[in-house]
Every structure is written in C-alpha cells, then in structure tokens.
Amino acid sequence: VTHTLRIGYFYPEHLNLYGDNGNVEILSYRARHRGFSVEVHNITTATDITLEQYDDLNIIFMGGGPDSGQKAMYDDLVNSKKAFIHQFIADGKVGLFVCGAYQLFGHYYKAADGSILQGIGVFDLYTEHFGSNKPRCIGNTYAKLTSSITDDPLFPKTELGTHIVGFENHGGRTYLGAGVAPFAQTIKGHGNNTEDKTEGALHNNAIGTYFHGPFLSRNPHVADYLIYKALRLTPYEVEQLPKIDDTLVIAAHTASKNLKQ
Ligand code: GLN
Image (cartoon, rainbow, N blue to C red):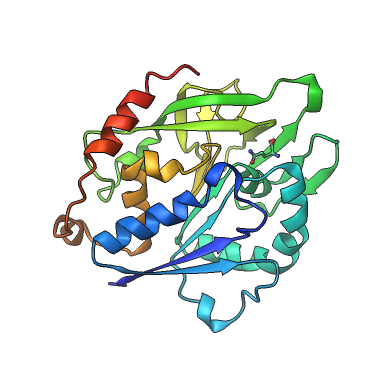
C-alpha cells in the first residue's frame, strides 16, 4: 500500500477559476485526516515532468480557466506534458480535470473566436464554443454518477448516495464519442452540451467534468473515492480508516439539490 498521496497540481497559475484549487485542498485534508501523508507538487509551464520526483505521483488535477488561460498553458500541455499524462492515465492512475482542462483533453476545442486548439486526446470527445450564437451554460447542477463508479467496491456508501451537486459556467459544448463514458447523468443543469443529459467523461480512472469550484468539498464521497483509488486501497483497508464528521457537508450537499438551476 502506498501511504502517501502525491498530488500533481497542473497549471495553478493559469487554471484556477472559481477556486478550483479547493479540490486539491480537500483531497489533502481528507487524506491527512485518515493518517496518510500528502505531497502537493505544483506543475507549471516551467516544470520538467520527466524528472524522477514526478514518477510517483498517484493523482493529478487540472482546473478550469477562460479561453485566455487555456491558450497560456496550451503549448506546454501539448509539447511537454502530453506524453506523461497519456502514460499516467493508461496506467490506471487517477486524474480529475475540470472544465477548461477537460475541454483540452478531448480531440479539439474550438474557442469562442473560432480558433481551434487540438486536444491531447485522453478522452474521445470534442468541444465547440459557439460564441455569441448560443448562450453560456451557467448555473447550479445536480447529477447521478455513472454506475461504473458507484458499483466500484471502493465507492463510499454514504447518505449522499450516488449523486453529485455543483456549479457550471462554460461556453463550450462537449460531445462524447463512442470510446468514452459520461462521468454522470444530468438531472439539473446543462452538463456537456444541454442536449444529451451527459455530464463529463470517464476513461480508466480519469474524470473530466464541468462541475466547477471546489467540487470535491461539496461531494466528499467523490473525494474519498479518488483518494482510495489513488492509493489503491483494498475495501478492507478502507473499512479500517478513521471516519470524518461530514454532518455539515452533508447538510449543505442535500440543500444544494434544491437550488434553482
Ligand atoms: N473557456 C471555456 C468555456 O467557456 C472554459 C471555461 C471554464 O473553464 N469555465 O467553455
């Protein structure tokens, strides 16, 4: 068992809209409370990801950002980090990619100004922003997690059940191909594209989502799931872990289900 959660936090300087960095804080907090040590490695455009110190990362995170933030890290993602990320995901390690990052993990992202950014192709999907021709997808969200996650023996059985709550704000609309599963099924909100009720994407243990901000603070069951997967715990080991009092979080999560979109 690996007892250290080693988080690679990509591009904190460019992709941190609505406090997406809160996800890294929640992962760290919840892992530490279970007695695990935590290392957070900030990975910027200046980072040489081939260095040995990055071999042992067991979870990577990338937040959202406006088109300008995406363009600022784009060259580095494609030229310096793409091979690492592909290998990481192929190895079954855990990744969470929000909004602006998620969009760049598909085949391409067509930005509001019409320019096309080729994606790194981790997910079989593409995204198009229709500029002022279509309204942005904004508001509170509520969705049901895909069953391959909730059927996993490591998925925590809590009173939060199999649903997630969040907030989205994106102009890009994402369309999934046959080679990728949705992360969740939307109940409230636009999700990937408003049309097909899918939200986000799942490939191996890589998750893409439009749920912004400190998504994991509002969805501690997902946070714990990612930690258990990243550390490759057994269900027995999970049973032995100290519990965290989530009374307030559960109350907030439950209340959020009734927010207006
Ligand atoms: N620029 C992208 C869009 O508007 C991503 C925005 C975001 O990360 N919130 O679709």
